[in-house]
Each structure stands twice: as structure tokens, then as C-alpha cells.
Length: 447
Image 1 (cartoon, rainbow, N blue to C red):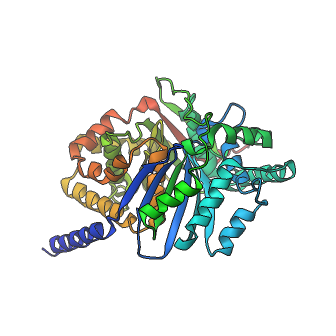
Image 2: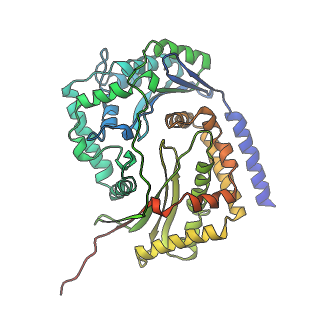
Image 3: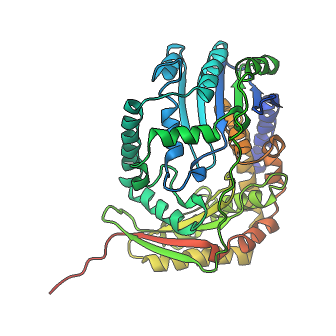
């Protein structure tokens, strides 16, 4: 009775949050093709200003891996009228902060400032959308920066190198198999001319999405956007480029990586699965729920509860789904076994746990618990203005519509236990997977 009352009380609170956070969202397109999304949230006199280009590492020319990320760095160097570093200096001088990020499918630039500085942010961002400028003395040191970044965030971390190897094995033709930061040998050959060519090919208002979230009036924000971005002519070269398709996977792939830096050996498996699709998000929603059931929190995870707490085989077990990608999604599961359990035994236990889940079906009480947690997470995410702006930027960049983005919670609510089992059986095709063992080097004694 107490648990049921607590559940109902939480539902009332969440319902109130939905009403409180259902702030207006306006979507428009300027004559030059720039999409504009305005999310009104008047709780604080702050605004987030984001410009998204739906182009990223998966759109790079051959032998130029890392060029999208390199260009992201060079976008802070200057324009025809602004000095290198001036953009960020102005943001900081106005009490704000700025940054940027690159993915396979998009590149984004954002500032968070007082709402009365929104026009200034638009003025500067519109400037570098069309007037980027840098010298060899500026791009050469930045190339060293990204090479050092690869060393720090990827090559110095064995887990990151292992994940890089998994994706390279999973995607043989599609560029999702190439790391976003690039391969070192390609990065070392990047030049400023290559970056400028990439900029000229992909950047422009007709290949960009402006997201404004915070203490703004939609009509005022659209007027500012028209003032600063409207005069920029469309870039005729900037259009969504075709990408190679991944050929059918006829056999499961495997790899073993040995490294002395490995603390706890582990098994990881990655499946190629569907991403979120516009107008029909049912498969993605079912995969999202499947990942939450198999590998959510320690108290609700099927694999964690069975393999760790009940059988004592695993230190941890997990599952996750990455669906916010343009061409393919990825479903991951894995296990880190206790010391006296081999990786072969751990993999067999993970497969057995998954097979038993599919055979026995979903526990209805657990299903409702996970659904409620998922709904709560989606609702609480509305409380973060920047995260909400990012949700629209990511969604529109990968080809979703505003209706898809706003309907994601409804898609999750529509998932049934039968949908979850069907997704596990039909979409997690072992032939479209790669399984990796990450372990320490084997030592042999010589008598």
C-alpha cells in the first residue's frame, strides 16, 4: 500500500512538472533555408544560443579523417573582421561561456549568456558562418592541438582504443567505423586548405539549424535571427551528401585486444541496429526500453541482477542503445567477470542471461518500474534548458522532425513487453555484431 501510494504521489509530481515545463516551442525556416527553433523558458534571464551544422566526421573526404573536428577548432581562430580568439573573449567579457562539439552526424557551436546579449551572439555566429579566416601560422599549431587531444583522450585510454577497434570491425564500409577525432596518420596530413574546402562545401544557412532556448520571446528571437542570419545567402554547395552504405553482414565478427594497462578484463558486444526514424520511432523506442531492462540501474538490470547478485559471475554487466544517429544505430552489451571467471565463460553467461530473458519474457512489474523511471528521466530532462536545446539540435540534425522529437515520450509509452522481446529477437542479429575481449597479455613461463 505504501509503495503504491508513493508511486501515485510521484506520478502527481511528474504530472506537475510536465505542465510546468510545457513551454512553447516555435519552429520556422528563413528564406535562405536556415531552420530556427525557439524554446521559451522564462525562469532565469539566461539564453542558450546554438548553431548546428548537420555534417560531421561521417561526411569527410577520403584520407581526411578528423577534418570536421579540425574545422571546429579553426572556427574560433577569426574572421575577416575579428581577430583569432576574439569570439570567445567577447563571450567571456559578457559573462557567458561558449564551446563546440563534433559528432559523426553534426557539428555544433553554442553560447550561454544573459538574454540581453542574444543579438551579439547572433551577430558573431553569423559572421563566422560566412567569413571564416585563418593563416598558416594559426592552423599549424591547431593541428598539433588535435593530435595531442587524440593522444590524451583516446590513445592514453585502453578502453577508448578498444571501442575504436570494435567500431572499425563493425563498420567496414560506412564511415561510422572511422573515429570522430580521426586516424592519427590522416590527422598529421590535414591542412588549412582542406579545412577551408570542407567549410565551403558544408557550412551555410541552408545547411544549419539555429536553436535558441531560455528567456526569450519567440517573435523577438525570430526577428533577431532574420536581422543577423537572414542576409546570408544560401550556399549552393552545402547540401546533405550521400554516404556509403554498410553491406549485409553475413557473419559475426570477433577481436581480442591485449594490453598491460587493462585492470579488469571484459567482454563487449556491439550490434548494428536501426536508429530513430522519422514518423515511426517504434523500433528505436523498443530498443531503448530493451537496453533499460537489460542494463539499466543495478537494481533493475536483468543482466546485472542475474550475473552479479544471483550468480556471482560478474563484477558488472551492462547494456545500452545509441539511436540518435543518422544512418545506423548501435546496441551494446557487455560483462566484466570476477577474477576466477574466464572471458569465454563470461561471454557464455552473458549470452545465456540474454537468451533466458527472451525465452521467459518481461517481468511486468519490472517493466512498469523501468517505464516509470524512464518517463521520470525524460521529464526531469526538460528542467535543463541547454539539454532541451541539444535534444532539438541533435534530432533535427539526424533527420527527425520537431513532431518526432516532441513525440518521443509517447513512443516510449507505447512500447509493450511484446515489442521489447520482438526487438531483441529480430533486431539484435548476431551476424551484424562484433564481440571483443579486452584482456591483459598472456604470460608464459619458461623452465
